[in-house]
Amino acid sequence: MFILSLSIHDILTWIAIVLCFTVITLMSRFFRVLRKRHKATWMTLGEPTAVYNFSAAIQWKVNRFLWRRDYKQLADPMLDRLGVAIKILMVAIVLTLLLVGAFWTEGE
Picture 1 (cartoon, rainbow, N blue to C red):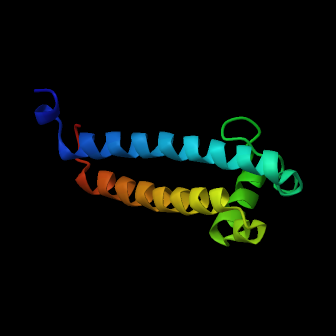
Picture 2: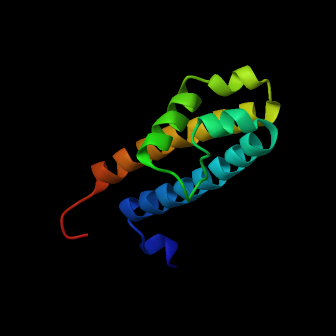
């Protein structure tokens, strides 16, 4: 079976990839809710989208907005759920990538 032939490094790499796509999807929803329900905040953040218009300056603003939990001030349950989920997945990505590095060996 294909799965059985994968190394732990390969499996962790695929997990990291899936987590990244999941975060992109959740960020897209987060930005859509901001744009539709809280346009002024969305504009203050630089009108971010998950793929386009996501410069380093906008990314900095968005990350600060998420990690300082500024979205809580908007009192929007959807943003609360998405914000928490995004942060949990971001931490999971970092931990998974650290594990990928720990299991990486020359020649793979």
